[in-house]
Length: 354
Image 1: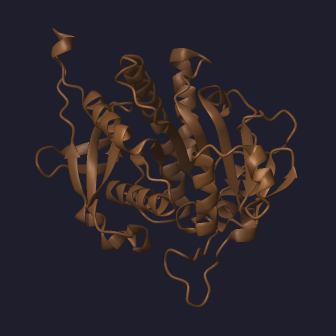
Image 2: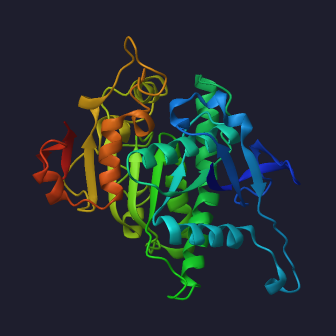
C-alpha cells in the first residue's frame, strides 16, 4: 500500500511530464508554487535510512495552466491538490503540514514526510500528510552550507505564506456541506522554523496581523529560531492569531542547535533553551522539555531509535511521539497535569517529559 505525501514547493521544476524532476534551486519567481503528490511503497519506512527508499519515490505534478484572458479556464495545481486533500480528510480526519529542516533534497524531504506520517500512524494518529519543501541544497553539513540554507529558508517564507493563504482561501470558498470535520495542524522542524518566520511576515504584507485561523495545533520542534520569537511581532508571534495552541519542544542538550548557537553565532535558539522568558508569553503557548527522554546513541541502538545529536526526536523517539500524538488529539493542559506518568508540570505552561 502506498503512502502519499502531498506537497507544495518553490523549488524549480527541472522537468515536467511522466517522470518530473524537482531540483534544489529556486523558481525564478521566488514565491512561485507548484503542487503535487509523492507516493512511497513499503511499511515502517521510519525504521529505514532515507537512502534506502527515497530514490524510489513516484512524483506526480499537478497540472498548472493559466489563462490570462479567462481566469475561470485556468488550471490551478493548488485547487486540484487541495481537493484531493479534502477527500482524504473525509476518510482520515486530520491533516498535518510539515516543514522540513536543513540539508534536504526534494526526495529526501518527501521521504522524511513519509516517515513522519507512518511513525505517527504507528502511534495511533494517522494523518493526511502535506509537505512544504523549500530549496534546501541538500549539500551536506558545514558552516558554508548552513549559511546558504538559512538564506534559502528565509527567502522561501514568501512562498510558504502564499501556500497558507491559498489553503485558507480554498476552505473559505467551499460550502459548509463540502467541508470535513478534520483539523489542520502544522509541524516545523529545525531550520523549517526560519522559513515559518518568513511566512508569517510575508502574510502580514497581505493581511496585516489578521493571520487566518487555519491551524488547530502548531508544533515547533527543535526550532532553529531565536528564543524571543514568540513575543515579537516582527518574528513568529503574529502566528498565534492563526492557531488554537502552539507547542514548543526543546532539548537543552541539542548538539545541532548548540552548533547553531555557538559556532554560527546565532542568538539563543528556541529549540535548545525554550522561550527566553515566561512573562508576556501567550497563554496559547505550551513549552515541553524533552531532554529527560532523549535516546542517545548507545550499544544496540538502530538508526531510528538512537539520536547522536539530540535533534531528531520529533521523528524517532517513541516517548516524544506519545506526547505529540496527545497534542495533535487536542489533549488539554489539565489532562496532562492529571497524567503524571507522561509529563511533569514545572510551572505555568512549562512541562517536562517523564
